[in-house]
Length: 443
Ligand SMILES: *Cc1c(COP(=O)(O)O)cnc(C)c1O
Image (cartoon, rainbow, N blue to C red; front, side, top):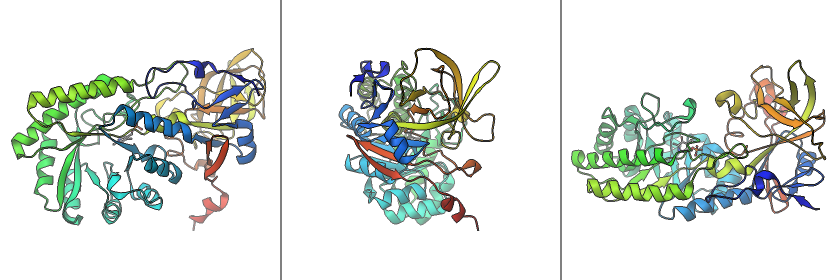
């Protein structure tokens, strides 16, 4: 079948993770179908139903390899919360990545695929006793401590030699949405650098006989576009490494800079400059370490979104079209239960009709979901074919990260499946949630 190049797919890449909004392997056929990982969207919808989350395995692996190639000296840790599922954790394990988990639940998924324990990092500002115990039982490589209470609790539970990192709030504004800005002062994550709490936390870790200081950690936010924000974090964190040495007489061996590397959600949006980041990170780190006369620590990075977001496409069926006074509402069979990001962050998406030839004439429309909330909007003010009607199939790209992860069963709508595609083959990774699943917990 002849292939017409999509405008987004034709754009040239500027760095290793840049490129298209949909997975690179996707292409639009002249009959209007969209091929993802070699499989037509219409066939995926017919076989697995809608809504359906499709993940292109080759795209994930390509992005993983790009990261490793650009930062060979760093340990790349997949932020497992962005797409928690066994298959994906398995891909990351096979690519040699490490994995960060935020709970005993995510750890259970890692354990079920035999993810090497020494490459697992446990995170989060609240870890309940079950999380800590599960992590210790599995023997995770590192636990990132986030509060004084936690240091004491972990110190009491851990056997000798448990490696920990101290999460620091470096006071760097990453200029991202408030809900995902985690590096600024006065929010719930980490120990403040400015107040001296971070240095004090290091002292508390060193006093615990069961704990060993592996390094320092910071995560300045998510969907961060500016490399300069990371440079500033490096500058401040190396200053802290020097302070740790002068106050406590220990060398910090590892510096974890977190994740947050931005991805494009709409055609034409900038991609994070990964090559530039790697270069400027090295320069800043070497310069600051030389200036403070401390050894250069080993670097860790924790990408989540930038590895999986652009590998995902969600398919929806149009159930009804309402032509209002000033706008057209296109209502689909999913909504805020499978994608709460527009409601949480005002996230925007490009939407297209697939599976049939569409007329050139287009009209503004708002794509809404099936849930009982007026805020249940998937895409506001998008341009869709003027003849859009019930039964049309919609494809929404860039849904690989924080979609399955954030899904709920609001209105007791079962969560959609995840279907993996690779070179024309499909594999059901997570099945659709059934009524039986929903009833099982309700006693
Ligand atoms: C969420 C998170 C990440 C990943 O963020 P992305 O924006 O998905 O890259 C990394 N580290 C920590 C500590 C996080 O909380």
